[in-house]
Amino acid sequence: MLLRHTTTEIKERKALTVNPAKTCQPIGAMYASLGIHGCLPHSHGSQGCYAYHRSALTRHYKEPVLAATSAFTEGASVFGGQANLLQAIDNMFTVYNPDVIAVHTTCLSETIGDDIPQIVNKARAEGKVPEGKYVIHTNTPSYVGSHVDGFANMTRSMVDYFSESTGHKEKTINLIPGYVEPCDMEEIRRIAGELGIRTIMFPDTSKVLNGPMTGKYRMYPEGGVTTDALKKTGDSMGTVAMGALASGPAARALDAKCKVPCEIIDLPIGLHATDMLIDTLRQVAGVNVPESLTFERGQMVDIISDMHQYFYGKRVGLVGDPDQVLALTKFLVSLDMCPAYIITGTPAGKKYEKALREVTKDVPGEVKIKVPGDMLLFHQWIKQEPVDLLIGNTYVKYIARDEDIPFIRHGFPILDRVGHSYFPTVGYRGGMRLLEKILDALLDRKDRDSTDIEFELVM
Image (cartoon, rainbow, N blue to C red; front, side):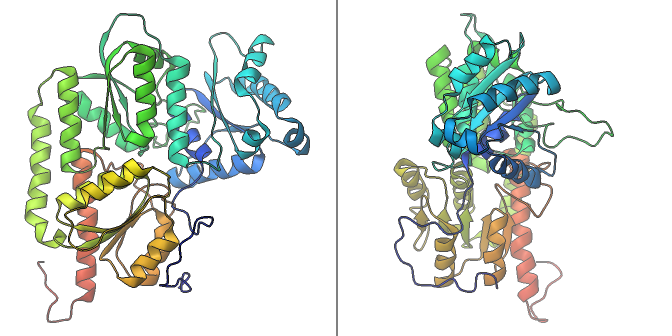
């Protein structure tokens, strides 16, 4: 009963967040950086920030996360971190030999006002950046936005620093997968492969944060988009960006810089969103949908048809990143479930909130939405009227335990389970996995609550 003091009385709060449904920008920037092959992320700030960012990613992915820090002390905090970053760039290329150093800022360096491009230019002029190596950067003040914004900013920086247009269009499509798991990126690439499309995915953390144990240590894992591939994104015939908040800025930047037209769609979570991904790829590339994908779609429709009675009318509480929450809400509504309480900690804007309200306008009963909101408010709503299922990151488990509600872990971070890095929830296969998880949670509860007379072998 860790949250037993949560009250049902709700008071309007503007300057206080309790149990935030988000984390800070640098974590998202660091995650995106790891999606470049041979990249060493660099946190320009204090060691405390850097340690937190690394541990957050390590605990979620259960993999060691490489990064470096400018290691601000009192002097750098007052006079700026130029000397620290110059020394760090020299040390990193000399000792660790990365292809790319991806610098992101923290609250401290943002408040000081360090000019990262000027410092990097100085490092290059002083010969600290070897030929053929790169230093890119993005600004990620933690007191603004969330990890989703950090991911979006670093992904857009990949376009700003690398994308080039030679004037000759290639038959490739850029895929910007959004803030999803490495296995989700792998699944999106597989679907494009089934369609026979050549793609460049960026960032791409598959085989970086879900790689195998081989017995051999590789400082820079096999996966990640290469710098050569990033340069070629400017010659692609189109871009498909998944998730407006996490991927939209990079797609629009690429369109503006290299005239690569973009389609920005929802994350392909659920039947209709996956249909949209495949149809968009089909139209952009001018290909036909193969029987293999039609077969997978049919399997998913079959599960929904067979088990619809268990989904129908179930009230759900949702917490998570805005792109994830929007796609999940659409999926739940399509199953005739009732997303009753929806919260995202990321300040996603009024347009986003309007989209959520449009999706849920026909859901029976009142649908409460807060953008941005926190988990204290979410818990208070549940105390006033319970739901049948909770979906969110690991921090939601405290509410699930206190209120005795079935709970599915989804999103970032998941600190107390494994599998999220290896088994996708996007595409038809991922949708089938989500259906299984929802059914398991609901039917386990039904089994538990049944009397001896009601307890059935076949549900």
